[in-house]
Amino acid sequence: MSNNSYTKEFKIKAVELLEQRNKSVRQVAKELGVAENNLYNWRKQLHKKQENAFPNQPKHDEKELELRRLKARIAEHEEGREILKNNRKT
Image (cartoon, rainbow, N blue to C red; front, side):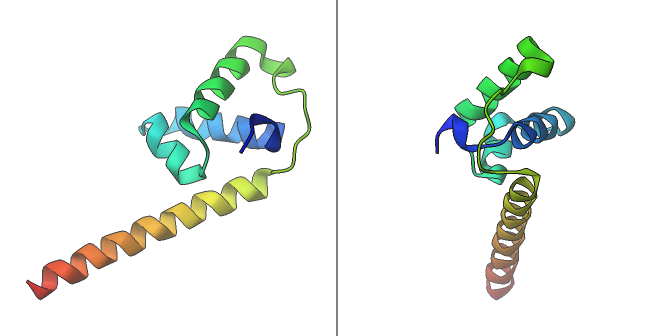
C-alpha cells in the first residue's frame, strides 16, 4: 500500500506506538500491517517537520489503526494457543 493511503492521524499514532513500546520497527509494522519502510519514513518526517508532516489526507484513520492492532493481537493469541495445545499433546 502506498504511503499516501494512510491519514496523518494514522501515521502519528503508528509512530507513537513505535516510540512508546519496547518493540522493533519490524514488530510494530507487523502488528499494524504496514511496511517497515513506512514506519521509518513516518518517524523521520514527524521528527523533522512536526506540525507540517504528512500534508495529504488519505483513506485510513485512527479506527483502522486500532482494528489492525487488535487483529494482530488476536492472531498472536491464537498462535500462542496453538503452540500450547500442541505442547500439551506431546
